[in-house]
Image 1 (tube, one colour):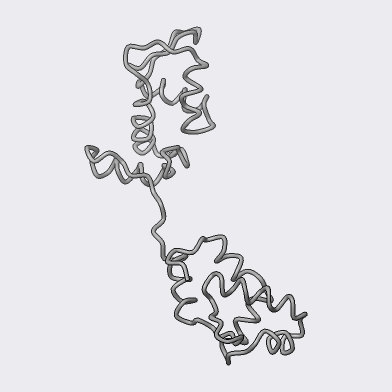
Image 2: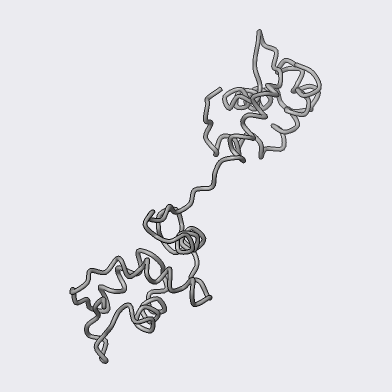
Length: 181
């Protein structure tokens, strides 16, 4: 068995009704492919293919044509797949603890914004993170501002307005020029 099986293989192995029936049968006793096919009333070819796939992901072991459930391997597969740490954004270490916690809560692992906070304090932290993408002293067009914001979230107009309202960015009254304060 691989040390880290692919999630897709594990899901495929455990999401098929016939494979689950085979696992249930092998949990009671080892059996050959023919015995599995006969007891579960399925074509031999289907039973053999399912057993081969279960052996590939490490859920069963085959010895001299007899298949047995690899209980320790199934348990390890489940633990590896479901006990993994959820990936999260890792904020800069120089931020205070509150800001770090807010960013971990509201950002995806790639640094894009998962959800725009409704609470003003949390929104301010996310906006401070977002404004760092703009270089001080550089003038931007509205299109350029939208392109930069879109890397983080699809709501470009809302976030652009929030950056202006919070005083982190400024703009000409006609919207022709934006800059970071």
